[in-house]
Length: 290
Image (tube, rainbow, N blue to C red; front, side, top):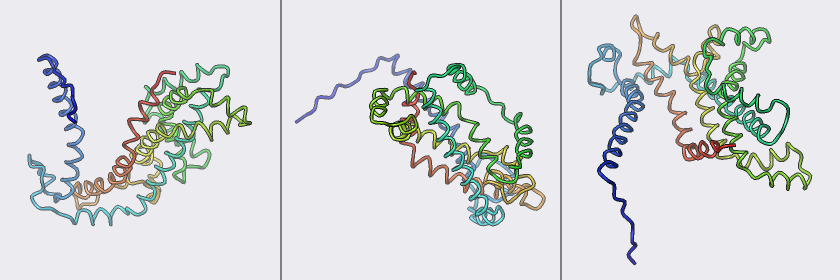
């Protein structure tokens, strides 16, 4: 049986607007993808070819030895373990803190609630960046936490909480309060409602927070570099890979650093590919007005 499908007819003005949008999207896609492609292709060039530059982004000779040198010289086994510990720690802490705070801001009434939440959301648009490094490092020294990555994990957890709490609170607001009331009648405490009812329903937005926080921990550079200046064994991949440019004799070894950077981005790409289908759903689900 033939199906009657309505065909959308665009006016010339709409076609022109769509064409302009496609051109803009293609332009921004090239801006995002080109640096990654350049690094991957550059990782197969020898250092002399990279230093010469030129318009040809493809290597004249494919040098696989760059990856062997990067793996051996950057101590990738240790640095990868440190990056995984840092990223998973930031992800777990961010999920716990943001879901609990979002739940409390949505369901609890207490003095100053809106003021505190307003301060949190204001920090979505404020980034103190490197200004806070010195006081954070001095604080870590005072409490004797500067000898491990746990200080970097704890400080990084606080870095993106404003956005994560905003997403969680918006999503919890969309959950009917009748579920809470029914659970309370059955004898559930405030925490049991959070753990048994709210957490299972927060899975879409939690997937989004997991991706963003894992990426935050994996890509963190300035803070780990400051905290691991005198402790090379604590360095994550971002810091270790940057040190590879000093692996050459005299000239900066950009080829080895590019190879190390290519290896370093593989895990985050795998994480994104595995959870990307939850990413946009979590963003839109947590952006409801509440």
